[in-house]
Length: 263
Length: 261
Image (cartoon, rainbow over all chains, first blue to last red; front, side, top):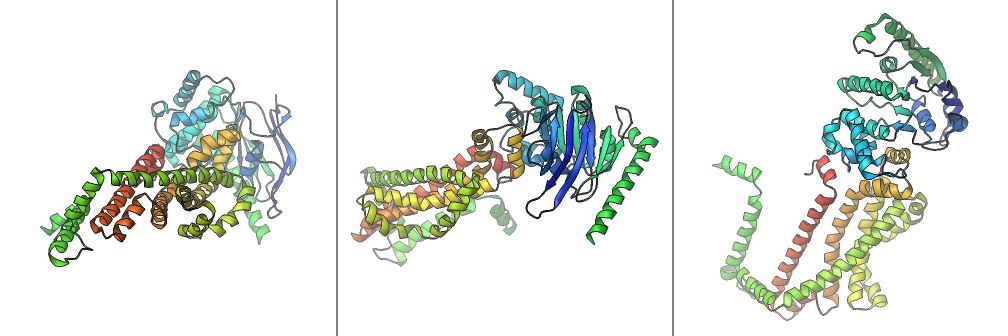
């Protein structure tokens, strides 16, 4: 199933100033694939992900999942937001936050849901913190709650919008490895937006680079590094370094071009 | 020695209580020896008058009358203010439609409604309830809709990705997220509601603490007048404490995460 998630000549123009966030973006993601989407700020990568999630509408083009168009948010396609302090509700305990993802599903049985939610918390290493409130947790732990809540809905695909960019380096590294483990274990499909080139390379099997505003696909780079990846060994692998150099020069090109276009 | 006093002033809140005791002592002393006039009775005489009026049931009766009309007006203001505020905060068209009107009416000071209400509702119990209602309504309405409007779009997107219906979104997101600000409005209005209830009673009434206090003054029963004012002070204090207690039960998460507790 090569075209599991299919994005076809997608474009978004903002009504407010008539400018394109991005235009004519086409790519597809295979089931079980881990794809990273990077680009300079302002290329519309976050908007693109919102459209794929069904949270907003494109001005042109289409998004299809398993051949059927995406018209709104759906349970098999979960979104993880960058701003975990907002997307995790501070008035709910950790467990209640996770439960919120499933409590309104049809024929949800309270006892079973609790078990399911606790299992998700175990999965992300938060089993002990079920009854804590978010403000009692570190940023990394809060983002784990968001991931656990998404997983509780048993999605096939995770759409992640710079989920680790607000975390400090240590936590980011931890969560990157956690995410790779979850992806592998649960056979997830992941589309991961980031502005961090190293993060994209470390996590993904394929990196899509967007150009600066208006965003277009500038380059697609396969990352043939094996899993499990290792924060030290992988990042110093000669192949990794070559890919990094290539991605880096594409990024620099894009930023320079954007500057030139502005002036 | 002065270091010791400094520390006591910084670390303990007892100094505030001591100050009140000292002022009461000074009042007693001044009324007994310095300003010997019937308009300035000693605290002990006021206290006696208070006890007498509590024991013979006069003050409790007036207290209940005031509390009843205050709570009725305040309760209705909460129901109306919160429900209309939620609707205005959530639905942009309703906000656009009503916000200018609210801004136009809001600056009218509560007591200014009184003459209109006398014309339309009369001078009975209902007039005072409506007076309290109208004056307490606006702070609750305003705080509710601005609380809802301040909810981050990410939180609404979260609700949508979790597939929540509108009703579920209100229950799980809108009401809890706006509750700190709703409670702020309710607290402002609680103070206003007591003021307006007493004011209404002072204008036209035959019961209530406002009536009791003003009648005592007009009939020159000065200790009773002060006893009425003390009772109002205590009532206001107790209501505020009770409110804080309810607030910390309802939004403990907010008070703790913002360092207020």
